[in-house]
Length: 184
Image (cartoon, rainbow, N blue to C red; front, side, top):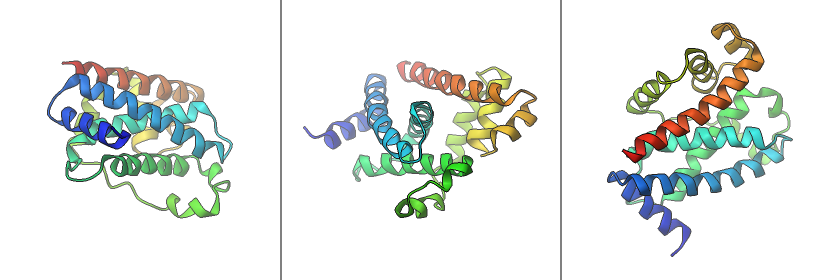
């Protein structure tokens, strides 16, 4: 069985409500995404922490958008598109790194993420309400609205380092909440 066939079977089972298949899908995709992001970020001198944050963002997006996956299409291009958009969003937020983007990937920086639906936004809002206020504020400001860390610090009334810590811990907490929901 190829990776595509196996992942697609897990996604279809996940869409039908199989919590174990959903967990397994997210675990397998996390491994693939981790390798993808580490490779891309290494080109611009970024490390494993940024890659892990992007993995968590992509897994969250896949979870929230799984209902938009068309079973008649291959799964991996759909996942890759989400992963690519998350990378583009990261590069936009981290404008200092944009000068280091290889020229053959520069066009990706101007692409737009149109995968967010009203349903996915509502799902995210419910998840964010389960986090401490400062953590939710930091994630919403930086990861959803695209503000810089400094702008988020002013909005949330915390230090810039607290914004970074809250985002990192908050993304892990969101992943745990998603895993809990998938088990139900």
